[in-house]
Length: 601
Image 1 (spheres, rainbow, N blue to C red):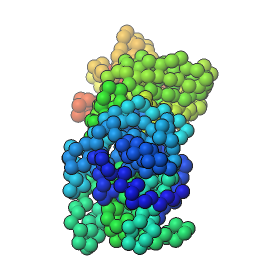
Image 2 (cartoon, helix red, strand yellow):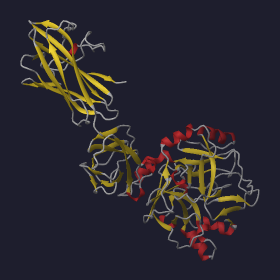
Image 3 (cartoon, one colour):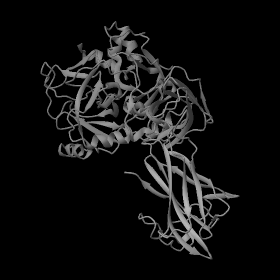
Image 4 (spheres, rainbow, N blue to C red):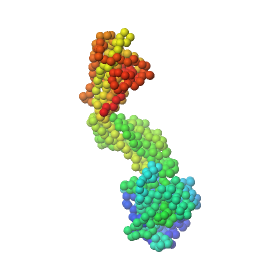
């Protein structure tokens, strides 16, 4: 509903108060706002409301509305500095009410949707002459209830600005909202027409350099700072009635939001706070907005009061997957994408119903898993700004699944809706359930006479045939008959005890294999059978070939001569050609000379 306000009533907007009355934009050429916008706040001048009510005005709240704002949490509203400060003096918090949860100004003067202000915080660098740092916060006297009609907004980050700047098309990517002037009753713009209902208008993004040039060409002295951004509609199409005054924010929309419009409207990041402009709807002079991303650190600092601190937590991206069988250890990476330390948050984890989760993480307490949901609270050491803390969990699978990939969804939340960029609050952790399929083979590769004895070397290859599951803590074990002697017994990767040996291969990734070169001495003509086995920490699939036997005949004449063994620190990598060539780096002689790592095709 559009409403034509008389000059006498209009005077009540500024009489007897410290509210700014200059260069305050409102929405021109827009339409009734979509009802999905749930974070809009109307600033109400309490003395003006009381005066209008005393004069039996039809719409006292409407007549006392003078600026807009955005709900950031249950306790904080973001607005423009010039809405709450004039000539260096802050507006008294008692003179401000905030209408939250209504897109119409047609509400009673005692409506429960009107909330009192507890304090006003203006950026210390605000300059009324240059409009620099035109940003402010209002703390609510009591927390507002979040519900179907009230949701906090999302603040843009530097990354949001970068993506916006990189778009190939800036046409109508922004939305400005407010309760301000919608049109004029005269060509001279002396008779403004206001709306009782929230309006929105789609605008083009205007890069700062282009915006500055537009102001320079029109003889204006304003400096478009990096802490500002611009928007306009160079080719207005007007509303269905053919509005001739363009499309723009206009008087009264100050402090309201400028969003980069997303499909889910209330998830649209707020990139700007409506700040200043000249003739509303002027296609040549863009409207100017305070760039929100430049003030995130200031917002975090100013709101760091007890449990009211605004922060930006996220579930960090993790390309890795966690593996296990029956019990699976995994981590949830909680990232503090803001600047100030953050703690006291909730973590909600959705997982298969057969899973139960536990954690011994300091500062983390979790309720028993129920029906595929585990809820935790963290009140431990604060996660510093710009850092990530990985919280350790163990999942127990009652179904002992194998060969399955499971997605676990984790969501981090701050109480009182204190996360100002909730778009990254949820992330996915991948668990691969099962055990690897291992095989081991061995064959002699060379034979030489050394130091009045015969030395034979054989290669043992361990392969992981599984497509997804790694083998953890892989090792080769066995024992040698008394007639055989291991060559060189001083490598840390292997140990020997009375002829029993153990060599560590470590992680053997899926679809890969490692090879060990074993050097043994014996008397000529000796013949023996050696058994070699493979073990690991995470078990193996049924059907794995975990043991093999190699026949050692020290009288063979068909094997190549073994190359000389050089010290481990100077060994060169072995070629892939088999028995000849140089030996692998770190050649073992206790049992292993180096695990040549090969990825299978």
